[in-house]
Image (cartoon, rainbow, N blue to C red; front, side):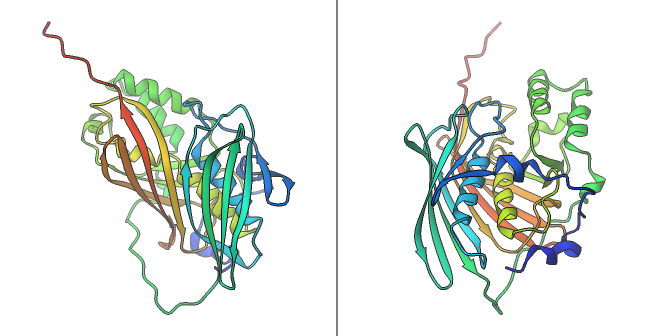
Length: 317
């Protein structure tokens, strides 16, 4: 991979004035070294589910893995399983195993542990940059730029001021508005309240880390993208059904990522999410992170458990 500073003109977004370091770098993805290949991470954001946010575990695991490889290799793929519920009240220990260090590729196995038991396992593969005459990619969807779209806060406020909005959506939006997350979002073509019953399992939004990460190490931008990639991802599978079924339990089972091109996670990227299938109390989602210049930077896939509340018998009254 070429260094991220080559992206300044191509990806757009510009650096904010001053040294407003992203909390994703200074806190959320910051690990405390305890021994060789052993790190401790702490949580800084807990969703309303009271579980650890899966994206933070993925991001911290990748941080730990990246510390065990040389400067000239970068992650090209990772494959993870969430095996137990994360406890937000205690730190997470990350144990790195140096599975293989080769001339071109290196593989690291990471195990996240709480209460003496693994809650998460991950395999990450790193590669030295290699030129290739064989290249292709899909075309980026044509969408409005983020500057022309409402901020996440403004969009939620617009929904809440709509008198036609159903109460169950109003409660959910108030919960989302109360959460402080370290990323910025601009939803593409947000549905009106009247369109909520006709949604397809597709979602697109512009996203970037809050604050400044800078040119720095490409490894950190990949770790931040791992954090970002889990946000609202599995929920794409619920979009065609949420008006008819109330979700009772939804958690990620696994998560995979493939890194294709260098990027900056503190610049706007388009996150294109779709769910090709749901059934058996599970949902499958695919995602693509596009740079603003149309380059496909990252691909993602995830499967998760989705259980809905049983519907009671309809009253004849």
